[in-house]
Length: 245
Image 1 (cartoon, rainbow, N blue to C red):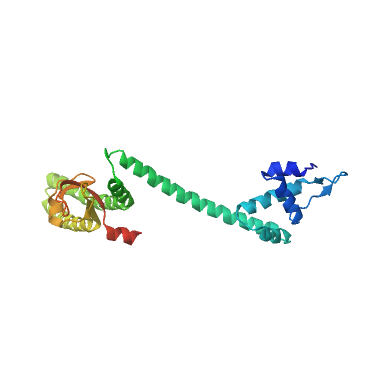
Image 2 (cartoon, rainbow, N blue to C red):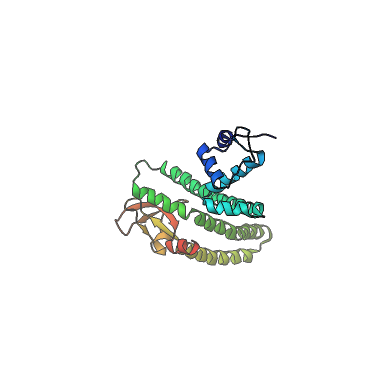
């Protein structure tokens, strides 16, 4: 079985010789034997114990607490529990850091499209990213709910042409009108817009939004704060952010 001197065990554990001597004086790590010349010699078990002590110290446990834990008969169970708790804590921190990293990457991607950016433009991008998932979810809902209406439309047209069943097309038209009104008003309540000039987040009337030229992510609107007329970026409404946050 290997034997280690004070210097050797200090090097293996990444601490100073004085630290090993201190633990000896506190009777937390007592050497298994002394050489004929009086030198402290540590066994493999002592090395393992020293590594546990160093780990517990890294977790911020005071020396007195470590001494009490190691003195317990079920010290292995206590240490195992501490390890499990630390593992869960680290996994949680990793998840949180990964989420922050994802937001950072999204922010960097957003800034690539801005020629001259300021604190306000960064705020606009951050605001947009914040509700991005909710907007994506809303658009998926529109797609899924609109699909049966589209299927009914083409089915009614085909049956009208092939079988002369014009009344099915009328049923589709009535459903489509009511569906269009309902989803348009539902969507209107869920979204707001950011002015690229003054960075104000605002809502317009349903009529103005309905008539406005638009892309997948923006509408050509009049900003009520600065009078800017042009494309404003679509974001989730603040009331919905709070409800979902």
